[in-house]
Length: 149
Image (cartoon, rainbow, N blue to C red):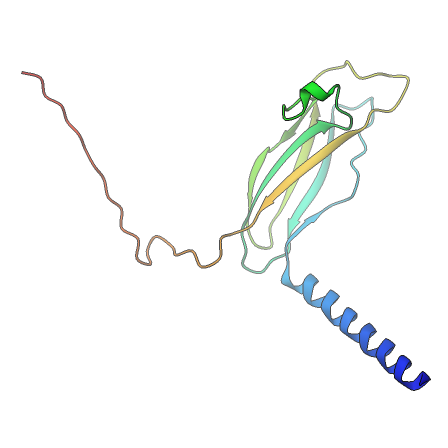
């Protein structure tokens, strides 16, 4: 009875181990850290974002939002942030890396305590099975000229 449970445990461990390595080898977007600490005496903080994929191109979007909403009325509305991310939109090619910078826009942050904000990122993957322009798409142009008599 114990031999069966040990065999199942070992088999389950091997399956989990193999699945975790195959997910990493697929590639994707890697952020340079889980937190971006912005010191109050500086105007800029930065982080590296890397595309570890062999062939996939990702479109990356970055923005900063407050940790807590001001009220229930603001739900669905994007609140102003005292920070701006550059570049806000970036095409991340295979095996490429970009340095994103978070710039402080105003000095209205409280100096007596920490402020927490989200550094949001949206990674838009490539569409599967999409043809290139040279593989069967045709461009059509329509020109309308209006002549008055």
